[in-house]
Image 1: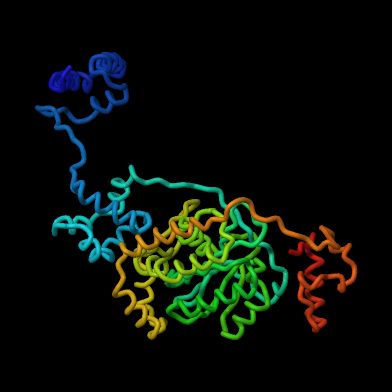
Image 2: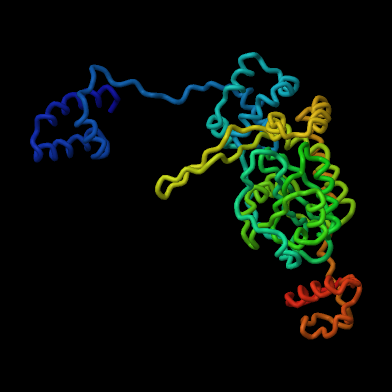
Length: 436
């Protein structure tokens, strides 16, 4: 049965169906469904609608192809070099990358125009076959810090500021499948206003290492350090970092324990800026720490802050039980720094001089080579088991006895009795005392 025959048959049945009674329509529908070979609901829509035309309607056909294979190939190359940005960010990155795209790929004016006007939905459709996402179970190594908690206020919401310099921070543990022994951790920070991010790798989670990383980050960010919001881990809740912030008049706050949504911005950066690059392998050597810092402080810093656009949540609109999130247009952190009147002019000028000589494709290639070299520094075998004081073993705090029994390798005794009393008070809150 061809289309012309079916159209002629429908023209014959349509007026009969329009004039028929309710009982006769049932009989006509049974006959039409068997002959026309369609569903009963489809037959009702056809026969209840307007009269058919003189000729069969034209078939709609497939979507017209606007972008040729070469344009899609260039798009895939940029997507891969940009470390797989999602469509809205990739759309915003194309104009930024265009001077270097034209150097790498031979583009005609029409192809360049097509790349500039391609929509995020079209990008998703053309890249659907090559996308591959790996989901892995995450875990944490943050231990609660009891010292000085009462001196650091809790902040449950994001910074309500319109100037840069208010940072959220967290640590990402590169401990593999075991949190025992000494391993590398990344101190990750992100500015709430500009989304500018800086990272430093440290060996262990000691107070001095964290404060040293914060001092380097303070020198690297192109604006004044005004605020710091961390989780309740002991690597942040300590006297050294508190003094560091007080000396610089930095507002220091913390989130509620075990409430990751309090620091949602840095938790998102932990995945996109750290885990997606280094994965979940174990790094526990000084060579790995130095190699990661070399990448953090050079190519990766410029690549993510200058050539990778990001979006910011502007507001949430609630309609009944449905919440709609409204985002601004994707921009790079560097673009947000340039339009801010609170940026440091000297640091901005120096960054502009350095950015003039950068090529995002070369940066991407160097980053891939350095990541491959860092992966060769993955620790082999299981982590070493910790050793314990021979006189104690694993004893409870209540069984330790006098403060004089505490070995100096575990806790540095202070001449100030008030400091010692605070340390002893916090030790009582722990279930077990482990010394290396």
